[in-house]
Amino acid sequence: MKLSVQLRKRKRLENAFVMVALFLFSGAVISMFENEYAWADPLGKALKLPVFVLTVLFAWLTWRKLKESLRPTLWIWLPVAWAFCSVLWSGFEEVTLQKSITLALMTLLGVWIGTHFGLKRLLLVLAVMMAVIMVLSLLAVPLFWDLAIDHQEHEGAWKGVFVHKNSLGRIMALSFLVFSLLQFQYAKTRFNNKLPYAVGLSMALLVLSDSQTAFLIEVALMVLLGFIWLFWRKPRLFKWAVLLLLVPVAGVGIWILVDGESFFGLLGKDATMTGRTPLWSYAIAMAMREPWLGYGYYGFWHGMEGPSNSVWKVIQWKPPHSHNGFIDLWLDLGLIGVGLFLAGLVKFLIMAVRHVRFNNRWEDAWPLLYGAFMIVSNISESAILTNNFNLFWVLYVATFTMLAAKQADEAQSHDRSPADASVVEDARVEAGRTPAAG
Image (cartoon, rainbow, N blue to C red):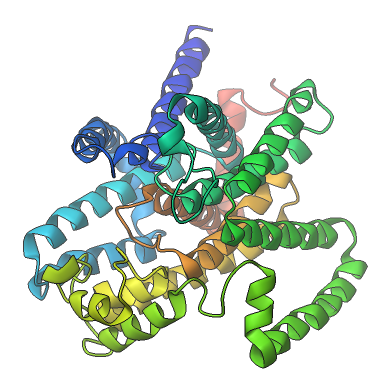
Protein backbone atom coordinates (compact mmCIF):
# COMPACT_ATOMS: atom_id res chain seq x y z
CA MET A 1 0.00 0.00 0.00
CA LYS A 2 2.79 2.39 0.98
CA LEU A 3 4.67 1.52 -2.20
CA SER A 4 1.66 2.30 -4.41
CA VAL A 5 1.23 5.70 -2.71
CA GLN A 6 4.88 6.52 -3.32
CA LEU A 7 4.53 5.42 -6.94
CA ARG A 8 1.52 7.72 -7.45
CA LYS A 9 3.40 10.63 -5.89
CA ARG A 10 6.39 10.00 -8.14
CA LYS A 11 4.18 9.90 -11.22
CA ARG A 12 2.51 13.16 -10.24
CA LEU A 13 5.91 14.81 -9.83
CA GLU A 14 7.01 13.44 -13.21
CA ASN A 15 3.81 14.72 -14.81
CA ALA A 16 4.31 18.18 -13.29
CA PHE A 17 7.95 18.30 -14.40
CA VAL A 18 7.14 17.30 -17.98
CA MET A 19 4.21 19.71 -18.19
CA VAL A 20 6.33 22.66 -16.99
CA ALA A 21 9.18 21.68 -19.32
CA LEU A 22 6.94 21.41 -22.38
CA PHE A 23 5.22 24.68 -21.46
CA LEU A 24 8.56 26.50 -21.35
CA PHE A 25 9.70 24.90 -24.60
CA SER A 26 6.48 25.93 -26.34
CA GLY A 27 7.60 29.55 -26.14
CA ALA A 28 4.37 30.58 -24.41
CA VAL A 29 4.37 33.83 -22.38
CA ILE A 30 8.12 34.56 -22.56
CA SER A 31 8.24 34.90 -26.37
CA MET A 32 5.29 37.27 -26.13
CA PHE A 33 7.55 39.94 -24.57
CA GLU A 34 10.76 39.29 -26.56
CA ASN A 35 10.27 42.06 -29.13
CA GLU A 36 9.36 44.67 -26.51
CA TYR A 37 11.54 43.94 -23.48
CA ALA A 38 15.24 43.06 -23.34
CA TRP A 39 14.80 40.95 -20.19
CA ALA A 40 12.49 38.42 -21.83
CA ASP A 41 15.10 36.35 -23.69
CA PRO A 42 17.57 36.04 -20.75
CA LEU A 43 14.64 35.17 -18.45
CA GLY A 44 13.49 32.44 -20.83
CA LYS A 45 16.97 30.90 -20.87
CA ALA A 46 17.23 31.15 -17.08
CA LEU A 47 13.90 29.36 -16.61
CA LYS A 48 14.99 26.50 -18.88
CA LEU A 49 18.23 25.97 -16.95
CA PRO A 50 16.58 24.14 -13.98
CA VAL A 51 14.73 21.94 -16.48
CA PHE A 52 18.02 20.91 -18.07
CA VAL A 53 19.63 20.32 -14.66
CA LEU A 54 16.73 18.09 -13.59
CA THR A 55 16.83 16.32 -16.96
CA VAL A 56 20.50 15.41 -16.45
CA LEU A 57 19.77 14.36 -12.85
CA PHE A 58 16.84 12.14 -13.84
CA ALA A 59 18.86 10.67 -16.71
CA TRP A 60 21.69 9.83 -14.28
CA LEU A 61 19.27 8.22 -11.83
CA THR A 62 17.76 6.06 -14.58
CA TRP A 63 20.86 5.67 -16.74
CA ARG A 64 20.37 1.91 -17.19
CA LYS A 65 16.95 2.41 -18.72
CA LEU A 66 18.26 5.19 -20.96
CA LYS A 67 21.23 3.03 -21.95
CA GLU A 68 18.82 0.39 -23.23
CA SER A 69 17.14 3.04 -25.42
CA LEU A 70 20.41 4.22 -27.01
CA ARG A 71 20.46 1.70 -29.84
CA PRO A 72 16.74 1.96 -30.73
CA THR A 73 17.03 5.79 -30.82
CA LEU A 74 20.30 5.87 -32.77
CA TRP A 75 18.71 7.78 -35.66
CA ILE A 76 17.67 10.48 -33.23
CA TRP A 77 21.19 10.96 -31.87
CA LEU A 78 23.08 10.86 -35.18
CA PRO A 79 21.90 14.30 -36.43
CA VAL A 80 22.55 15.69 -32.94
CA ALA A 81 26.11 14.34 -33.08
CA TRP A 82 26.49 15.83 -36.55
CA ALA A 83 25.44 19.22 -35.14
CA PHE A 84 28.37 18.99 -32.70
CA CYS A 85 30.70 18.05 -35.56
CA SER A 86 29.64 21.18 -37.46
CA VAL A 87 31.57 23.28 -34.91
CA LEU A 88 34.62 22.40 -37.02
CA TRP A 89 33.41 24.35 -40.07
CA SER A 90 30.97 26.85 -38.58
CA GLY A 91 31.76 30.55 -38.91
CA PHE A 92 30.18 31.05 -35.47
CA GLU A 93 31.84 28.31 -33.42
CA GLU A 94 30.69 29.46 -29.99
CA VAL A 95 27.06 29.80 -31.08
CA THR A 96 27.15 26.41 -32.79
CA LEU A 97 28.61 24.71 -29.70
CA GLN A 98 26.15 26.40 -27.34
CA LYS A 99 23.15 25.56 -29.52
CA SER A 100 24.37 21.98 -29.99
CA ILE A 101 24.58 21.47 -26.23
CA THR A 102 21.03 22.81 -25.87
CA LEU A 103 19.86 20.49 -28.65
CA ALA A 104 21.48 17.50 -26.92
CA LEU A 105 19.79 18.36 -23.62
CA MET A 106 16.39 18.73 -25.33
CA THR A 107 16.93 15.39 -27.03
CA LEU A 108 17.88 13.80 -23.71
CA LEU A 109 14.66 15.15 -22.19
CA GLY A 110 12.65 13.71 -25.08
CA VAL A 111 14.29 10.30 -24.67
CA TRP A 112 13.68 10.38 -20.90
CA ILE A 113 9.99 11.17 -21.47
CA GLY A 114 9.76 8.41 -24.05
CA THR A 115 11.22 5.81 -21.68
CA HIS A 116 8.99 6.78 -18.72
CA PHE A 117 5.70 7.77 -20.34
CA GLY A 118 3.15 5.95 -22.46
CA LEU A 119 1.15 7.53 -25.27
CA LYS A 120 -1.98 8.06 -23.16
CA ARG A 121 -0.03 9.61 -20.31
CA LEU A 122 1.80 11.94 -22.69
CA LEU A 123 -1.48 13.06 -24.25
CA LEU A 124 -3.01 13.77 -20.84
CA VAL A 125 -0.01 15.89 -19.80
CA LEU A 126 -0.15 17.70 -23.14
CA ALA A 127 -3.87 18.34 -22.63
CA VAL A 128 -3.24 20.04 -19.28
CA MET A 129 -0.47 22.15 -20.81
CA MET A 130 -2.65 23.15 -23.77
CA ALA A 131 -5.49 24.07 -21.42
CA VAL A 132 -3.16 26.38 -19.48
CA ILE A 133 -1.99 28.02 -22.72
CA MET A 134 -5.58 28.56 -23.89
CA VAL A 135 -6.65 30.14 -20.59
CA LEU A 136 -3.58 32.39 -20.51
CA SER A 137 -4.15 33.43 -24.13
CA LEU A 138 -7.72 34.46 -23.29
CA LEU A 139 -6.51 36.44 -20.27
CA ALA A 140 -3.69 38.04 -22.26
CA VAL A 141 -6.09 39.85 -24.61
CA PRO A 142 -7.61 42.23 -22.01
CA LEU A 143 -4.42 42.40 -19.92
CA PHE A 144 -1.86 42.89 -22.72
CA TRP A 145 -3.96 44.10 -25.64
CA ASP A 146 -1.03 45.59 -27.56
CA LEU A 147 0.98 42.36 -27.35
CA ALA A 148 -1.74 39.69 -27.55
CA ILE A 149 -3.35 41.15 -30.70
CA ASP A 150 -1.48 41.99 -33.91
CA HIS A 151 -1.89 45.69 -34.74
CA GLN A 152 0.51 45.85 -37.69
CA GLU A 153 0.88 43.51 -40.65
CA HIS A 154 -1.94 41.15 -39.62
CA GLU A 155 -4.39 43.59 -38.10
CA GLY A 156 -6.70 41.98 -35.54
CA ALA A 157 -5.10 38.51 -35.59
CA TRP A 158 -4.71 36.95 -32.15
CA LYS A 159 -1.21 36.08 -30.93
CA GLY A 160 -2.27 35.16 -27.42
CA VAL A 161 0.78 34.43 -25.27
CA PHE A 162 3.06 34.03 -28.31
CA VAL A 163 5.18 36.37 -30.37
CA HIS A 164 3.41 35.64 -33.67
CA LYS A 165 -0.05 34.59 -34.80
CA ASN A 166 1.32 31.52 -36.59
CA SER A 167 2.85 30.31 -33.32
CA LEU A 168 -0.55 30.41 -31.62
CA GLY A 169 -2.12 28.81 -34.69
CA ARG A 170 0.25 25.85 -34.75
CA ILE A 171 -0.07 25.22 -31.02
CA MET A 172 -3.88 25.35 -31.30
CA ALA A 173 -3.82 22.96 -34.26
CA LEU A 174 -1.88 20.54 -32.05
CA SER A 175 -4.22 21.26 -29.13
CA PHE A 176 -7.28 20.50 -31.27
CA LEU A 177 -5.71 17.18 -32.25
CA VAL A 178 -4.81 16.23 -28.66
CA PHE A 179 -8.24 17.01 -27.24
CA SER A 180 -10.00 15.31 -30.17
CA LEU A 181 -8.09 12.08 -29.56
CA LEU A 182 -8.88 12.23 -25.86
CA GLN A 183 -12.54 12.93 -26.56
CA PHE A 184 -12.79 9.85 -28.74
CA GLN A 185 -10.79 7.79 -26.22
CA TYR A 186 -13.00 8.79 -23.28
CA ALA A 187 -16.29 8.92 -25.17
CA LYS A 188 -18.12 6.77 -22.62
CA THR A 189 -16.77 8.32 -19.44
CA ARG A 190 -17.61 11.35 -17.30
CA PHE A 191 -14.30 12.89 -18.30
CA ASN A 192 -15.71 13.33 -21.81
CA ASN A 193 -18.20 15.98 -20.60
CA LYS A 194 -15.45 18.62 -20.41
CA LEU A 195 -13.47 17.68 -23.50
CA PRO A 196 -15.84 19.16 -26.15
CA TYR A 197 -15.30 22.59 -24.57
CA ALA A 198 -11.53 22.19 -24.92
CA VAL A 199 -11.91 21.06 -28.54
CA GLY A 200 -14.16 24.03 -29.30
CA LEU A 201 -11.85 26.54 -27.60
CA SER A 202 -8.85 25.16 -29.50
CA MET A 203 -10.67 25.66 -32.79
CA ALA A 204 -11.88 29.14 -31.76
CA LEU A 205 -8.34 30.31 -30.95
CA LEU A 206 -7.08 28.72 -34.15
CA VAL A 207 -9.62 30.74 -36.15
CA LEU A 208 -8.88 33.93 -34.18
CA SER A 209 -5.16 33.54 -34.92
CA ASP A 210 -6.04 33.95 -38.63
CA SER A 211 -3.28 31.48 -39.48
CA GLN A 212 -4.30 29.88 -42.76
CA THR A 213 -1.26 27.63 -42.62
CA ALA A 214 -2.25 26.24 -39.23
CA PHE A 215 -5.83 25.78 -40.40
CA LEU A 216 -4.67 23.78 -43.44
CA ILE A 217 -2.47 21.68 -41.16
CA GLU A 218 -5.47 20.95 -38.98
CA VAL A 219 -7.62 19.99 -41.96
CA ALA A 220 -4.89 17.63 -43.20
CA LEU A 221 -4.58 16.00 -39.76
CA MET A 222 -8.34 15.53 -39.43
CA VAL A 223 -8.49 13.94 -42.87
CA LEU A 224 -5.67 11.58 -41.88
CA LEU A 225 -7.46 10.79 -38.62
CA GLY A 226 -10.59 9.97 -40.63
CA PHE A 227 -8.62 7.54 -42.77
CA ILE A 228 -7.15 5.90 -39.66
CA TRP A 229 -10.69 5.43 -38.31
CA LEU A 230 -11.77 3.88 -41.61
CA PHE A 231 -8.78 1.54 -41.54
CA TRP A 232 -9.75 0.41 -38.04
CA ARG A 233 -13.52 0.23 -38.40
CA LYS A 234 -14.30 -0.03 -42.16
CA PRO A 235 -11.29 -1.58 -43.92
CA ARG A 236 -13.21 -2.13 -47.15
CA LEU A 237 -14.29 1.51 -47.35
CA PHE A 238 -10.73 2.56 -46.53
CA LYS A 239 -9.41 1.39 -49.91
CA TRP A 240 -12.14 3.25 -51.80
CA ALA A 241 -11.62 6.37 -49.69
CA VAL A 242 -7.92 6.43 -50.59
CA LEU A 243 -8.76 6.20 -54.28
CA LEU A 244 -11.40 8.93 -53.99
CA LEU A 245 -8.95 11.21 -52.18
CA LEU A 246 -6.56 11.04 -55.10
CA VAL A 247 -9.09 12.82 -57.32
CA PRO A 248 -9.36 16.12 -55.38
CA VAL A 249 -5.64 16.04 -54.54
CA ALA A 250 -4.78 15.69 -58.22
CA GLY A 251 -7.31 18.42 -59.05
CA VAL A 252 -5.74 20.86 -56.56
CA GLY A 253 -2.29 20.05 -57.90
CA ILE A 254 -3.38 20.80 -61.47
CA TRP A 255 -5.12 24.00 -60.29
CA ILE A 256 -1.91 25.23 -58.62
CA LEU A 257 0.16 24.47 -61.73
CA VAL A 258 -2.29 26.12 -64.13
CA ASP A 259 -3.50 29.07 -62.05
CA GLY A 260 -1.68 29.14 -58.73
CA GLU A 261 -2.44 32.81 -58.17
CA SER A 262 -6.21 32.25 -57.96
CA PHE A 263 -5.75 29.21 -55.71
CA PHE A 264 -3.59 31.06 -53.17
CA GLY A 265 -5.85 34.09 -53.48
CA LEU A 266 -8.73 31.92 -52.32
CA LEU A 267 -6.68 31.18 -49.19
CA GLY A 268 -5.89 34.83 -48.63
CA LYS A 269 -2.31 34.39 -49.89
CA ASP A 270 -0.42 35.51 -52.96
CA ALA A 271 1.31 33.12 -55.34
CA THR A 272 4.61 33.63 -53.48
CA MET A 273 3.04 32.43 -50.19
CA THR A 274 3.62 35.82 -48.55
CA GLY A 275 7.13 36.11 -49.95
CA ARG A 276 8.21 32.61 -48.97
CA THR A 277 8.94 31.21 -52.45
CA PRO A 278 11.53 33.89 -53.36
CA LEU A 279 13.08 33.38 -49.92
CA TRP A 280 13.26 29.64 -50.50
CA SER A 281 14.86 30.13 -53.92
CA TYR A 282 17.67 32.33 -52.59
CA ALA A 283 18.14 30.18 -49.47
CA ILE A 284 18.50 27.06 -51.65
CA ALA A 285 21.00 28.92 -53.85
CA MET A 286 23.06 29.66 -50.72
CA ALA A 287 22.74 26.04 -49.56
CA MET A 288 24.15 24.92 -52.93
CA ARG A 289 27.38 26.77 -52.11
CA GLU A 290 27.99 24.44 -49.16
CA PRO A 291 25.84 21.47 -50.20
CA TRP A 292 27.29 18.63 -48.13
CA LEU A 293 28.32 20.16 -44.81
CA GLY A 294 26.25 23.34 -44.63
CA TYR A 295 27.33 26.44 -42.72
CA GLY A 296 27.31 24.83 -39.27
CA TYR A 297 24.49 24.40 -36.78
CA TYR A 298 23.00 27.89 -36.32
CA GLY A 299 25.81 29.20 -38.50
CA PHE A 300 23.79 30.79 -41.31
CA TRP A 301 21.09 33.17 -40.04
CA HIS A 302 23.08 35.94 -38.37
CA GLY A 303 21.61 38.96 -40.11
CA MET A 304 24.04 41.17 -41.98
CA GLU A 305 26.97 39.64 -40.06
CA GLY A 306 26.50 36.14 -41.41
CA PRO A 307 25.97 34.36 -44.73
CA SER A 308 22.30 35.35 -44.48
CA ASN A 309 23.22 38.90 -45.54
CA SER A 310 23.28 37.71 -49.18
CA VAL A 311 19.64 36.65 -48.85
CA TRP A 312 18.54 39.75 -46.95
CA LYS A 313 20.01 42.10 -49.56
CA VAL A 314 18.14 40.42 -52.41
CA ILE A 315 14.67 39.84 -50.94
CA GLN A 316 14.44 43.25 -49.20
CA TRP A 317 13.12 41.93 -45.88
CA LYS A 318 14.77 40.36 -42.86
CA PRO A 319 13.52 36.86 -42.05
CA PRO A 320 15.15 35.11 -39.06
CA HIS A 321 15.01 31.79 -40.91
CA SER A 322 13.94 30.38 -44.28
CA HIS A 323 10.38 29.54 -43.15
CA ASN A 324 11.05 25.94 -44.17
CA GLY A 325 12.47 23.42 -41.74
CA PHE A 326 14.10 21.24 -44.39
CA ILE A 327 15.86 24.15 -46.10
CA ASP A 328 17.12 25.46 -42.75
CA LEU A 329 18.42 21.99 -41.90
CA TRP A 330 20.24 21.93 -45.25
CA LEU A 331 21.76 25.36 -44.57
CA ASP A 332 22.89 24.30 -41.10
CA LEU A 333 24.05 20.69 -41.53
CA GLY A 334 24.21 20.14 -45.29
CA LEU A 335 22.83 17.21 -47.21
CA ILE A 336 24.53 14.82 -44.79
CA GLY A 337 22.53 16.29 -41.92
CA VAL A 338 19.34 16.26 -43.98
CA GLY A 339 19.97 12.62 -44.87
CA LEU A 340 20.50 11.64 -41.24
CA PHE A 341 17.28 13.35 -40.18
CA LEU A 342 15.23 11.95 -43.08
CA ALA A 343 16.50 8.43 -42.35
CA GLY A 344 15.22 8.81 -38.80
CA LEU A 345 11.94 10.33 -40.00
CA VAL A 346 11.33 7.44 -42.42
CA LYS A 347 12.00 4.97 -39.59
CA PHE A 348 9.58 6.96 -37.39
CA LEU A 349 6.83 6.85 -40.03
CA ILE A 350 7.33 3.11 -40.62
CA MET A 351 7.04 2.43 -36.88
CA ALA A 352 4.01 4.75 -36.65
CA VAL A 353 2.20 2.99 -39.52
CA ARG A 354 2.98 -0.39 -37.99
CA HIS A 355 1.70 0.84 -34.63
CA VAL A 356 -1.59 1.96 -36.17
CA ARG A 357 -1.88 -1.30 -38.05
CA PHE A 358 -1.65 -3.51 -34.95
CA ASN A 359 -3.25 -1.22 -32.32
CA ASN A 360 -6.65 0.43 -32.50
CA ARG A 361 -7.00 2.73 -29.50
CA TRP A 362 -7.32 6.42 -30.25
CA GLU A 363 -4.04 7.31 -28.56
CA ASP A 364 -2.34 4.88 -30.94
CA ALA A 365 -3.09 7.28 -33.80
CA TRP A 366 -0.89 9.97 -32.20
CA PRO A 367 2.51 8.87 -33.62
CA LEU A 368 1.35 8.84 -37.24
CA LEU A 369 -0.59 12.08 -36.83
CA TYR A 370 2.34 13.79 -35.18
CA GLY A 371 4.70 12.57 -37.89
CA ALA A 372 2.38 14.15 -40.46
CA PHE A 373 2.27 17.32 -38.35
CA MET A 374 6.08 17.53 -38.34
CA ILE A 375 6.27 17.17 -42.11
CA VAL A 376 3.45 19.56 -43.04
CA SER A 377 4.25 22.25 -40.47
CA ASN A 378 7.88 22.42 -41.57
CA ILE A 379 6.91 23.30 -45.14
CA SER A 380 6.16 26.91 -44.19
CA GLU A 381 7.88 27.19 -40.78
CA SER A 382 11.10 25.92 -39.25
CA ALA A 383 11.01 23.47 -36.34
CA ILE A 384 13.50 20.68 -37.11
CA LEU A 385 16.45 20.38 -34.69
CA THR A 386 15.89 23.99 -33.60
CA ASN A 387 16.37 25.70 -30.26
CA ASN A 388 13.24 27.72 -31.06
CA PHE A 389 9.85 26.03 -30.67
CA ASN A 390 11.71 23.26 -28.81
CA LEU A 391 8.35 21.68 -27.96
CA PHE A 392 8.00 20.11 -31.40
CA TRP A 393 11.44 18.48 -31.35
CA VAL A 394 11.02 17.17 -27.79
CA LEU A 395 7.63 15.63 -28.68
CA TYR A 396 9.10 14.07 -31.83
CA VAL A 397 11.96 12.50 -29.85
CA ALA A 398 9.64 11.32 -27.05
CA THR A 399 7.21 9.68 -29.49
CA PHE A 400 10.07 8.15 -31.50
CA THR A 401 11.51 6.68 -28.29
CA MET A 402 8.15 5.18 -27.27
CA LEU A 403 7.73 3.49 -30.64
CA ALA A 404 11.33 2.28 -30.78
CA ALA A 405 11.13 0.84 -27.25
CA LYS A 406 7.88 -0.95 -28.06
CA GLN A 407 9.35 -2.37 -31.25
CA ALA A 408 12.48 -3.54 -29.41
CA ASP A 409 10.34 -5.26 -26.73
CA GLU A 410 8.27 -6.99 -29.41
CA ALA A 411 11.42 -8.17 -31.16
CA GLN A 412 12.79 -9.64 -27.91
CA SER A 413 9.49 -11.39 -27.21
CA HIS A 414 9.45 -12.81 -30.73
CA ASP A 415 13.06 -14.02 -30.49
CA ARG A 416 12.54 -15.64 -27.09
CA SER A 417 12.70 -19.41 -27.37
CA PRO A 418 9.97 -21.68 -25.94
CA ALA A 419 12.44 -22.80 -23.26
CA ASP A 420 13.03 -19.19 -22.23
CA ALA A 421 9.29 -18.59 -22.12
CA SER A 422 8.89 -21.65 -19.90
CA VAL A 423 11.56 -20.36 -17.51
CA VAL A 424 9.85 -16.98 -17.32
CA GLU A 425 6.48 -18.62 -16.67
CA ASP A 426 7.95 -20.82 -13.92
CA ALA A 427 9.47 -17.74 -12.30
CA ARG A 428 6.11 -15.98 -12.37
CA VAL A 429 4.39 -18.97 -10.78
CA GLU A 430 7.11 -19.12 -8.13
CA ALA A 431 6.63 -15.45 -7.34
CA GLY A 432 2.89 -15.90 -7.11
CA ARG A 433 2.17 -13.40 -9.85
CA THR A 434 0.21 -15.52 -12.29
CA PRO A 435 -3.49 -14.83 -12.83
CA ALA A 436 -4.29 -18.08 -11.00
CA ALA A 437 -2.23 -17.07 -8.01
CA GLY A 438 -3.85 -13.66 -7.93
